[in-house]
Length: 288
Image (cartoon, rainbow, N blue to C red):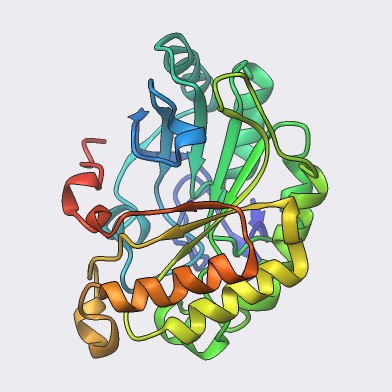
């Protein structure tokens, strides 16, 4: 395949034996873990958890990624669409409330092939870095019920330095606009489990509360009450964060509360993590 799935538009030749694009993924689908996951937002996990499919590789290269060994090093196992469809049925039968595809942008065509074989009856969630190609997102219309994008940066220089991305802010704003177009209203079942809509996550980085405050301003200005906001305080230095002194520590309570106060001032609805979530015990183990 000639790949232009993500906004980098590498025009890369991807075959079963060749991975020449930015993500360094070949044409076969690869996953690191498929299992119930209990620690997502309450409306996603409920009491039984969310069935999570963690894909290998990523179209960003965040130096602090807590999933570094799968996002940067592409560790995992190859799986066919038929095999994944069978795993989705197993997850559904286990009683999970939702099923979530984590960092699947580089495998969207294979994901659609999977869901054409079997589409679970529980809400399907596309968990994304936010850095997405609109044309690729359009392929997912009708397959995805809930979009769960990150909005990491309002500062493109910060995005370049920490995620190797030159145009993150505008690309992500446009991509989330497409997600909102597809899922233009938030809906929940009687148990409070989300059925349709967009939840935007923002991870507060140490030393960069201005970046976070401006991200919240962009979300409010562009999407208002059409989305939920999930403010995350779980940052722990991972990967190559030790090469960047400004982010080589956890966030402080003062930093987090400064951003949280601004969220309240803007009237954005959603969720806010407790700072106790900055704990390695919440990070999945990669058993492939």
